[in-house]
Image (cartoon, rainbow, N blue to C red; front, side):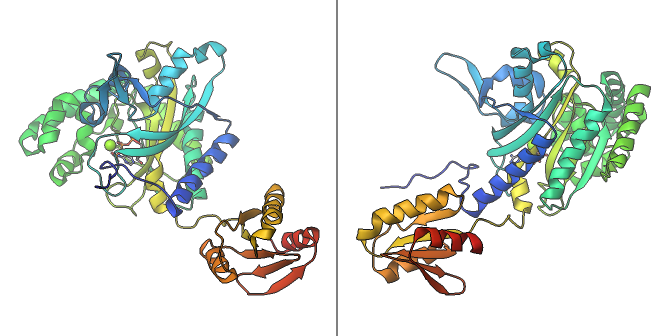
Length: 409
Ligand code: ATP
Ligand code: MG
């Protein structure tokens, strides 16, 4: 029979990799909790118009990367390529705004983009992200960025943080016009994609990776020169707050991000350790998006981190609990053994019952394969073996054995 293989760009995450995945996610989740973010579990499938109207018709994501299909009811749907759009939809649809105050949400899970697979770039990948709705204060921008900074520090990752301001719609509009005029002068020298971007999505030319495009945009007008007074003030304030929070940053006036909805603050956490796929977390403010999707005017901001990219950077995993494997020396001691294992688990010790019958020697070998730290041979007594030192001790009651194990662990 021919074997069935996984689809290109999709992967199985297991063993050490699965541990890394969990470690990255748990680290974020713990920090989110201390910042008082609440979880939202969002659907994987959404109406395709949601992404057209938020991420933007002209973006790479909507133009060529979305998994779209018509469901049996004739609905045009997409597998979600990102999480912010769904969060905003839910914020509006569930009328969270009516509750008053403001909302801090986080989400986690698979995203789908039909991209060219390579290290750190997959067609199904996983993000963890957070959004704040209903806050215009720059305090929120600073706290959000500082929260991500905290997580990456906890994960012991080397990174730099780049920030920029895209200004409000007005300043962005006048900047875009200026940029287009500048780019038109060099149109023939730009890569094919950027030639199209001049009309479609000119800001995106600024983060093209093609060397000639990079060279040309070096001298391009900078968005920071077009910021309204209000946007300038906000950007200054953000920098002041970040300094106060001991967050190191670099200003990058070319940082524009690939999605249409950003206004004012944008940021990226970048590493140089995994080649071209260096952005591990990114986000910004999107003060017009809620209204654009039919909600009341609501300032908002958020970020998303790429879990697989962070997994590539995680070196040390936290130490695991030691494993105690309980081995009945003959099936006569099976019941006693499963009862002992349960007792150990109930007092938060990690226990494995030897599930494979065999000679003592072969069961001990299996215990070793399972990476047991301790083995208990069960007969009319309990023989405890420390697998690292080889040291053995005999106990005549479960209570004595358990006391001894507690001391060792
Ligand atoms: P890039 O420039 O690398 O394509 P992006 O601007 O498309 O990134 P966002 O939409 O902002 O990325 O997504 C946030 C994060 O999700 C990225 O910084 C990255 O870590 C991760 N990410 C995005 N696309 C992929 C992918 N195809 N595979 C793995 N991770 C991804
Ligand atoms: Mg992308």
